Amino acid sequence: MTPLRWTLGLLGVAAMLAGARLLVAGTPPGTPLDVALWLAGAVMAHDLLLAPLVLLVGAVVWRLPERRALRGALLTIGCVALITLPILLRPGPPRNATVLRLDYPLNLLGVVAAVLLAASALVGVRRARRRGDAPNATGPGT
Amino acid sequence: MNDTGLTRFSPPRWSRRLRRAGAPTNWFPTRLHDPRTAVAVGRWLGAGVLVCFLTGLVSHGLQSPGDWLATRLPTRPVWGYRLTQGLHVITGFALVPLLLVKLWVVYPRLFVLPPVRSLRHALERFSVAVLVGAALLQVFLGLVNIVQWYPWPFSFRPVHWALAWVLLGATLLHVAVQAPAIAAYWRGKGRDPDGPERRSLLLGLGAAVGTVTLVTAGQTVAPLRRVTLLAPRRPDGSAQGLPINRTAAEAGVREVSPETWRLRLAGPRAHELSLAELRRLPQHGARLPIACVEGWSATADWSGVRVRDLLELVGAPPGASARVVSLQRRGGYRVSELPPQFVRDPLTLLALRLNGQVLSLDHGFPARIIAPNRPGVLQTKWVTTIEVSA
Image 1 (cartoon, chains in turn green, cyan):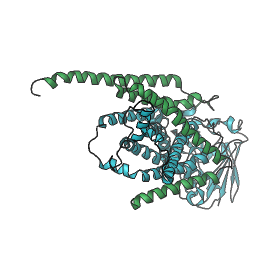
Image 2 (cartoon, rainbow over the protein chains, first blue to last red):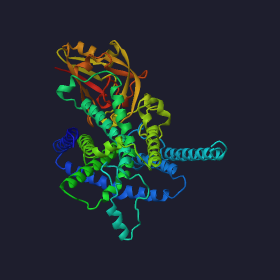
Image 3 (tube, one colour):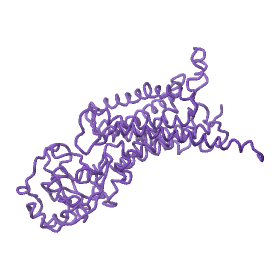
Image 4 (cartoon, rainbow over the protein chains, first blue to last red):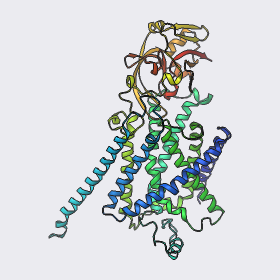
């Protein structure tokens, strides 16, 4: 327990209290409760929905060949899909012609395909290199 | 077990109980649910949270400066807000993979047994719950806000602002609580059987952050415009080369007649100017970015009359500030304040033209403010009055 550690911790508590005060003093009376509910909702959405789903997928991927490249690809695809979700789920038309004017479903598919392609290429190159290295490893002089 | 903090998260008691209960011997077969990986990911996540907080602080200061700060805001560099707010949203996007991987690493900690050992342990777990909730909600609020969707029952700005302090505080507290594990990570370069596995996870995380950035950052980073595949905005190819946030229809501004429209200048020698008279005043050009709080930005060529020339016309004292009033009837930001240093700045224009054309109605016809280093919401459109204020 160094003084630095205590200072950091106390600063943290002070900032949290300042935030709580801003929330209570800077918003209408019902808002702090709404925010508390949304905070709890965010935790539950992650802990009870997203995380178990990811762990389930992980349990399968763990047993597959090339799991490391696959994990990287799935992580990338999952994140790209998550950031596109608000655009895809947003109800109603865009507010004007300069917002949300791309073909998002098509672009998402394109990005997913590109990520899968890149991951496959990576695996292919690595396998080829391993095959190329193999004879040298057992050859004379080693 | 050792006291360096670099032990496995899952306590043996937990897995023993599970085994007795007939559960699979290891519920988290993929490795890396360890403090070392948590620190390796957490340092990047912490840096991202800090960048978002600091750039958010800048944005808040520019939008609601208060009396003391208002006269001290810098007008240079002209691209200052473009940089900070662009970084705010780019980093916000990058927090998605960073936050989710960090939470994946520490997820087994959710099930420690017993759930609460002591008052201190309870407080610590509560602070982690606040940290996780605030981090998830801040990123969610930001990502959904920039697609102009507001499904929550509260106002975005004050809540995002308050939670920014909560998130910063919870992060600092978390670093203080976990200091031994963090120190052990930086010290401990010893035996590490999970090294290759961890490096592969971090590479995957890097790929996710890189991809998310690549397909969204072009809404503010001009060279990346062409690979902007999944951002809410793509500034090129918009009307007069610039996106629009609030249209005239949304603002309740109907057609403005160039014959009857007058610019009212309120000051010691009040004055009214028609559009024709305004066009006969000395015209100046400025190449300035417009940078939206939603994270997009684009540079444009503006031309019009310098605001300081207009204030001289009404005999404003040196060091005067100005209040700009719009014709708009609906929505916020109808009135904006120009502090003295922005009034004096030769680049602050009452613009009449954009990229060589007369302003379109949606871009603020007949006249709008454009000033360096300010958020887009303060670049008031459809100007009707400029008042000298003190």
